Length: 593
Image 1 (cartoon, rainbow, N blue to C red):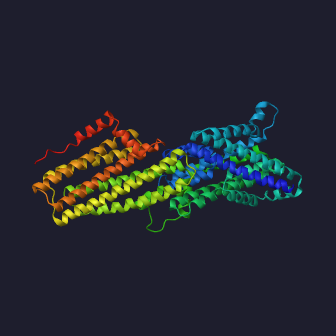
Image 2: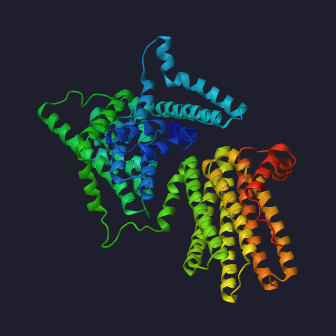
Image 3: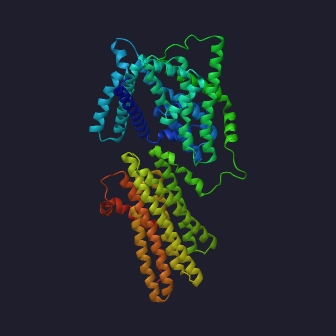
């Protein structure tokens, strides 16, 4: 084996790993966060959860990615530990799909169909189709499909390169002697675990073993412990991912490790005991890519079936390993909410965007609660407890803005689809608007406190008028929040007409206040307080308009805010009709002067 063979082997390995990464990313982006949402909903039944783990792992081609995802779910409180164990078992079976695809390279036969089933035959076709789609298509989903095709083609080309590069090793006696070392179960398991821990993918390490099998020097006896060790090595990714997480999230990674260690010990014990008494003739026989895929599948399938009834035992074992400190438990506080912003979800951008949207909805609810309470203590009776709650809400909203903003910036640096990128931009704008709405609630608390301290009271006429404006602002806030939560564009278009009505109400109330000043019904000092309240209410309405505009803009890349507002105001019956209806709904009480 020459230096050029070594370079080809390294290059082939690089292409193999790169192709697997490109294909996995393409599959993840194509799924658009749907796989993760399914995880959240279908984990109540053990069998369903196991089948789910199998399916998802078969799709994304990585049990490590599935397990890391589970660590994130449990850490965020989305999934229970026992449900995660079921999914892990299925994931271990699902990861065998890659080995079966790679084993197609070992098909023999002269027929056209057999030859076309070989990856070396159909992968160039997939590559041509994928490159053409990447070059000429502008559709995101088609580009994701193209990435999958190109990734698979590169993966298979790398596999063929590795197989070709190691072919000369069959004539090297020293290579055969090294492989004999791995007939020792302990050395074989350690070698498989170490290789997989380094490249952090059991599918990839099994692929490398399949490539080496092309030399014809790998026997069943040396391949078996390596394959079992590869399943242990793949646990490293989840263990690293669990650093800094909750106790239950750490337990997910520990269960994954125990599952594979227990399975390996059981499998090797049974196999070598039977071999000692029966004497399997195939132990010294040569294995190929297909045989490696068979062994990989039998091990993972049998281990899952055997350990499925002992899920509670595995769970208890995890609790014994990762113990709770005395008095420790999940605290129902705002920090629990932020567990949804798990760094692991950044690997699944579409899902991460949805989690950000969920937290933004919660942030909006807090801001709306503050506005409702602020209206109450300004217009009705001052309440110190409500004022303190508004201040606490303001601190919470500021924290939401900080955590969400930081996470969204990290998310924006990922390889996002155009849709996800626009969603991230929208959420960044919306959290800014919710934060400003909360600020206006605090401003209104200052208005209420000034009224309380100086013993100022609105006239009955002014109180009735402000209540109308409060109702309109409450309505526009409800519509804007519901439009954002449901991503309802039709609702979003209703915000601007109502915001226009709020502006008109504010103008009318100011004019009426001037009249009361002139007749002596109201003082100048009271006038400042009244004006501050109207200004803050009107600003809340403005931010609702911003939220609606962002939603509409998210669905139209060529959208221009100023053009949109002007277009609405000049649209005639549609806009004017809504303004008229809202004006009638929020008509001011008749003047008393």
